[in-house]
Image (cartoon, rainbow, N blue to C red):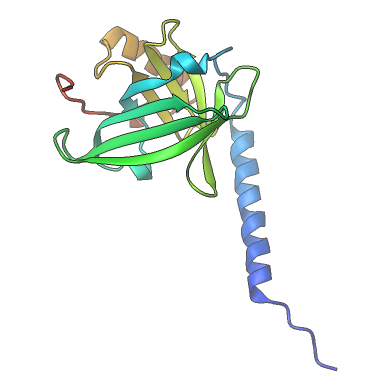
Length: 187
């Protein structure tokens, strides 16, 4: 009677899933729970935001003049349009479209964003100005952090306060990249 052969793809898939789950569990344990704002009115949050600063991200390498625009959809999701200009604010815009969904309906502050199926990323609103003029957004594993503003530039005292808040929440603010934006936004 021949010995049954175990398929390598099954073993490889199982090992990959186990390794991924282990890394995720270890990362989740390293940090305390990340607090978000108590409530976000997603209709007020919608619109154009300028990236003022970020932690390094592979998908934003060499990006300047970065913007994100959010539009509510009829099904309750949020359409996301991100724009990046490589190496120069005057370079041609690279655009990507995604969709965000709320994962914490009590606050609307925790979302998952998907730019390429089946991958999703966390988008947690950690600080939000009462007039929705600026925001601090991050990921619970502390690898993603963005300072956003409704205008291309944010005053130094406000920026400094947001960075201090991010540091208190466990983000490595020493690695922040300050995003170059145009002096005046053209219509």
